[in-house]
Image (cartoon, rainbow, N blue to C red; front, top):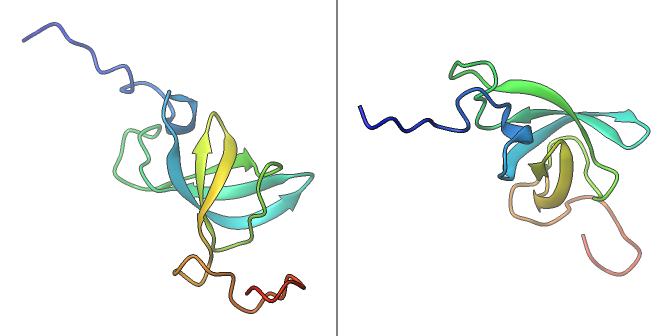
Length: 96
């Protein structure tokens, strides 16, 4: 035994010092969303965990994959269509 301790062992993934991908399950209003964190360490099991996070800084929709740090979405890394493009949503600028 080396005496090393994994600092993430008892930490919830969105409270650790790293950003993790999460899938938006539903928006709850007031800039919040319920997400499924893709690497759930807070429960101590391999199952994915649902958490409430702020999406106030990003334009996220259900099905999108976001990057979460300290319970705050800091980027949308994949739209629900899976290829990084916002399918079916007209932004008025010829995109999507």
